[in-house]
Length: 351
Ligand code: ZN
Ligand code: ZN
Image 1 (cartoon, protein in one colour):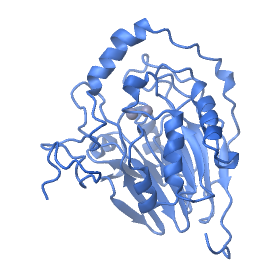
Image 2 (tube, rainbow, N blue to C red):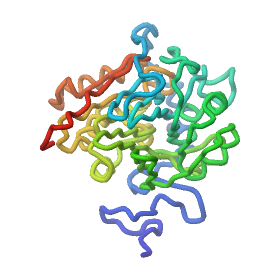
Image 3 (cartoon, rainbow, N blue to C red):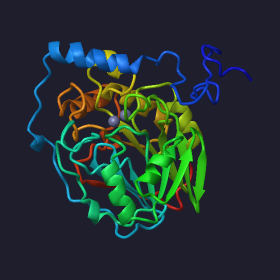
Image 4 (cartoon, rainbow, N blue to C red):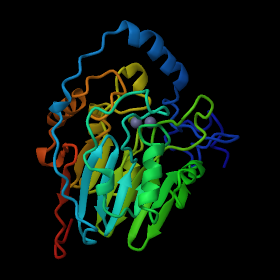
């Protein structure tokens, strides 16, 4: 099998290890999605951001807040709920476990505590009010998903938590104090009692400095417990892999999909989905599963890109109607809001 050579193949199928760069590091295997990301950032910073007026942001009060209603310390194994802390941080209760995604409680997603974009709204759950955390899922090393200060506090407060991270990110997480850290590659699976976690492909990139681009992997995660399953997409552009994720790991009761960070499109479309693309991804994920819910994320928390802070959910709702999807399958959460998914009846058959 020599199909993983750069430029090789050319048909629709992606060779299994095509995201591994020859000589080390990682890349996106879809050939149409390989821009020079640092060049794009430079062009955005130098030209676009100074010559294009950016839309005005609303007052942060446009984002409503809710009192969390997760179960403490743990929910029954058959229950499934999700609580939005903000950005890509969720507390998911599934299979009797408390699962946290891409935890960030800090004021700024930045290497420097006094610089970088500021948090637009406070976290929806206090960090010290979390129930005992069993599992932390990290999608990649960007500062808005991998926050050192939060990690140190979590590692101290929840020393028994197991941390799952994509390849080459384990050492950094251990340095933050986490004791039980496991690296996984795309499609690797881990079974914890009756819960199965799978690391899934994503179209994105990684870097924390100027010289580490692509050295660690990026990914999404799925968590399955019996008949209940959740898909957390991480940070991703639209890519031709959602159907396969659903076929291999779904169908999902809950799809946590990013909808913000898309402007300007000429550059951001390689790294972040627009709301319209997230709807397309959802349609490919649901695969005829009529109870599937989409919960949007990666908006309304940090000012990272050019679109107005309240534009992503507005465009999402418009795209939802345009696609003819039922309103009951869209769950736009307030910061702090918990959504419980009704358990499927034991006696239900057919679906
Ligand atoms: Zn990212
Ligand atoms: Zn991000």
